[in-house]
Length: 495
Image (tube, rainbow, N blue to C red; front, side, top):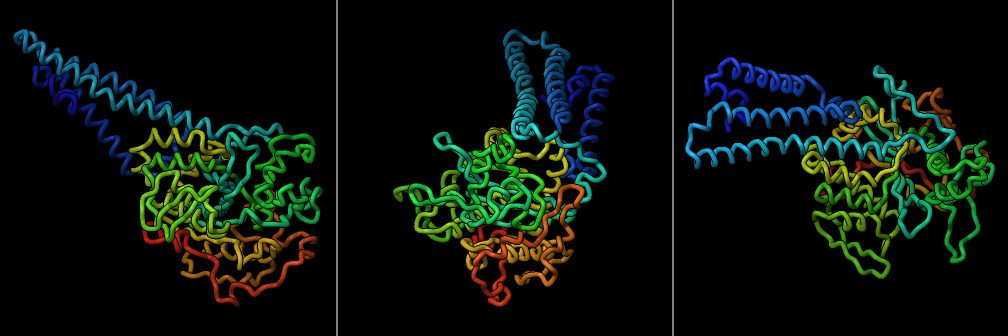
């Protein structure tokens, strides 16, 4: 039994001193090597490297070899102790115990190899090569500068409502995370699903189709299919606008939101809403302060009760999605609270202890165009974000009139929030007033033009014709639209 924890102990007891000392020395050297790596390596770098197939395969092979070696060690240790000196009953008892011990020591290695394989399959399923014929594979990032000179990375986070009984994808939740690659400071821009008269970058197929903004006839039931949340679906449904190219929805929505905010969107991640519920269940639920009862369901048949409570996946999703007796903007705030709770509570220890459940839940949860080689750099960045300042800017009334958006105001506020987030020591409250600089000036953190054309911060000429009623700026009203991510979400989540 001691040999299971200290290989070589049984050999020393049996008089095989040289063999025992060699085994103990190798074991001690392995432990010291692991300790040295743990003390000298950056956690983010280690976790980032663990996303690469070569490392995952090495872990699978290594754990398999170690498991087999430990099994052989226990059996050999038992033989070295000469159980034949015992009586029949003693031989049967010690042989059974040795066999059980040999199996027990193999189980952790087998579990580790199985978890690594599950992890590899999930990564390969999520981070697939581009499906568009006109989109070449992403180049390998340069180790010395994986961000290619960019000071910020902009990732579009989408929540979709795709289901077996629904066609197309409607992106009812749209947040753009703009991350400072040096500090991890992040601004989360939240865009309402019902933003009307959406403008497209001049010269693009959508701009030629809708020169005055996204405008379609009313549905048969009087509903609107020309809101921001329908851009993806419309582009996918009309490949003729793109010379017959299919699946243009993600690319069009990324470009549209980037143009709206005056930023370049690097990648997107689309999360299936109910797959997200399975992920929350996989980490054991999230603790949220529900400020008041949230009714949900087509016929008001569900209720998430007020109070600080740990919500399972389904209740967390209804809390984030319900508009019953509520509106889109309250729902956006609740979505922000759920994101903040996950950021705070999905710590590495929780993920590791529920690793297989998380990997299985994630496998069919996310659709993204992030190249898998970038993961080794994005994982360390994600750890920076977890411990950095995350602020939120929601483009909702009264800040923005969603029926008649002021595109200059949207871009000015976005540029202001970026500049405040990029400061080494950001003030507690950021001014909400539009920047005094010309709207066409792109933020210093914006990606270089060599990567993708940076959109002008001024809207197209047609936007000046929008009959948007002028309103006071946020500064004049005394309000600050830039908030902490979980501001107003209760004391149970990250502040």
